[in-house]
Length: 117
Length: 111
Image 1 (cartoon, chains in turn purple, yellow):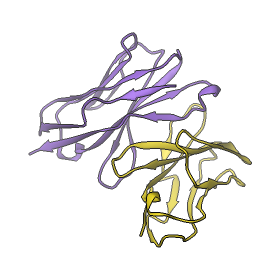
Image 2 (cartoon, rainbow over the protein chains, first blue to last red):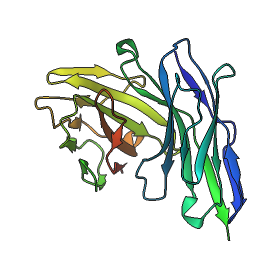
Image 3 (cartoon, rainbow over the protein chains, first blue to last red):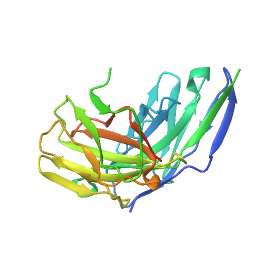
Image 4 (cartoon, chains in turn purple, brown):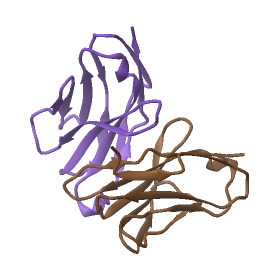
């Protein structure tokens, strides 16, 4: 079974600074996707960024980028120029890409990010 | 704007009541999922569906049941609510080639 581990229950960053959230995963599949989701106090689950396992290039979305290390099964999220609106719970998630995985998302336990003004 | 809708957004009910949480999507996605988010914020898959008349139990055992009579509709029912059912329930849909789309969630409190 796939597992996703986020070892940082809480992180804090100063506004305008950079922060990196860690995520490791375990899988025997070769074809899969990795995601970072943001959940603000409204509890809406918002997709931040996604990475296809077959792509060597790290995904980037504006101030958000990932460091995907497939051999190490590591998938960290870097937030640059942090803003107050970035404060939220961040979840790392895994999804297999075969029918046998049922395409279900497996989530880590989350990292609560605080942004200090 | 949301293409997947969950109602109600908040619900407080007494123990022993029967409730149905509604989830509807307008994207024609075949796959739909229910996740339970406990007060500690962990997310657990409790039900999923591949399409009409297809429902499966997820990783976390749940006393709830689901149905999928129409592609766009995936309601979740609790026959007799208990305080241990207090959680946020998130519905999501997906189709091949697209990512997940989540609803806004239903925050259920059983007193």
